[in-house]
Image (cartoon, rainbow, N blue to C red; front, side, top):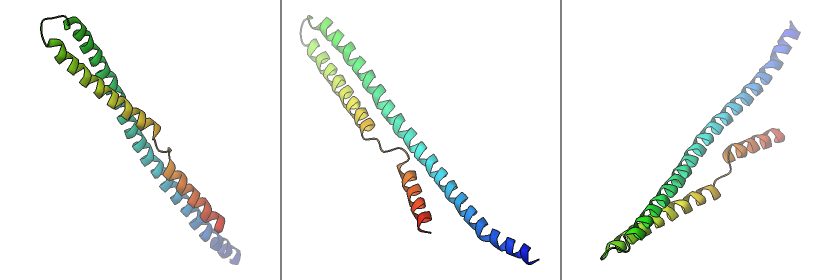
Length: 127
């Protein structure tokens, strides 16, 4: 009878420790999920800006082609097309620079999760 009570007493702290470990793991997995969602959103924004830059650059080339074709017409038509071409080219450059900046300044993936795992490791080392 005393052996059974002693065994049951040993399982109490062990169960609490295992429960704590599983709770920590669950929290960290939830954090990983949140970080994956944030990374997906950031990548979609960068992808959109890259596609916008490509589209605007294509429009600038089309306008430039029309500019060359119309440049030899009578009066001020080519100045208007030159302005449109410049606007499209500047917009494409802006989008391309923002996309490049988004890729270069990307945060470390799972940075918060790694910090939390490091804190957990420090806590278990101290005990």
